[in-house]
Structures are given as C-alpha cells and as structure tokens.
Image 1: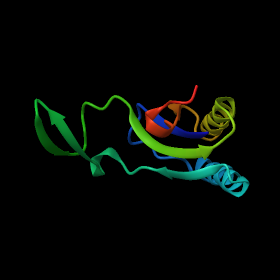
Image 2 (image 1 turned 90 degrees about the vertical axis):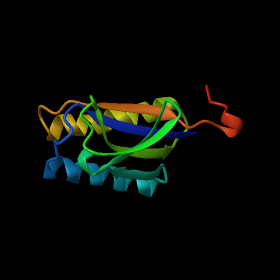
Image 3 (image 1 turned 60 degrees about the vertical axis):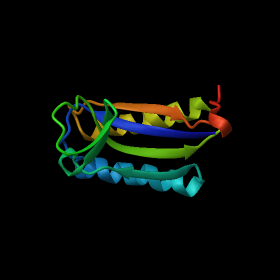
Image 4 (image 1 turned 90 degrees about the horizontal axis):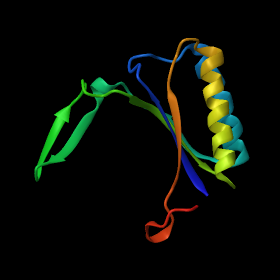
Length: 123
C-alpha cells in the first residue's frame, strides 16, 4: 500500500535545526535504501507560494503569503508499505526526531493512504 505523510505546523517560518536536518537525512537514506520511501521533500516558505482558487464559479490566482493559513505544510514523504501500522510507526519515529532535535517545535504528521483504482480507498 502507498501512504503519504504530511507534516504541518502552526509555526510557518520555523526552519529545522542542523541536527534535525541531519537526523531526517539519515532516516530518509535508510528508508530509500530499504526501498520503502518513494519520494520526500520539504516545501519552501508560504511567501513563495501561489494559490489557484475556485469560488463562486470564478478562478483567481493569489500570491503568498496567505494570512488565513492556520497550519502550514512543511514537507511530505511517500512510502510503499505493508500496512497502515507501518506508516504510523514511521510517522512516530519522524516526529520523535523533531522532539529530540528541535525542542519547543509543535506540529502534526498526518498519514493518509492513496486511493486505489477507480477511486477505491483501501481499508
């Protein structure tokens, strides 16, 4: 099964410490070598983004920063795993790295399975 882990934080401009970056690279290297990590990446700050919105049957393009954002996506990882439990265990390990190497940081790692063929979601 394929899963995406999405990391969000209410602290949009907080950059990872060098120790956290090193720890994340070690984890990513391990998971890439095992063949379980398909892709990963951190995202640029909100100010560099653009939103394409559809509201009231109108399309609009809005440049960042986005003041209404309560939580900001900081990065993602895509894994090919045997179970949701494996995906959750990796998310816990990843968030523990933040706890260990970036005291005071707060955030969430959301784990979601990809939909199967014809939009069917795995149980």
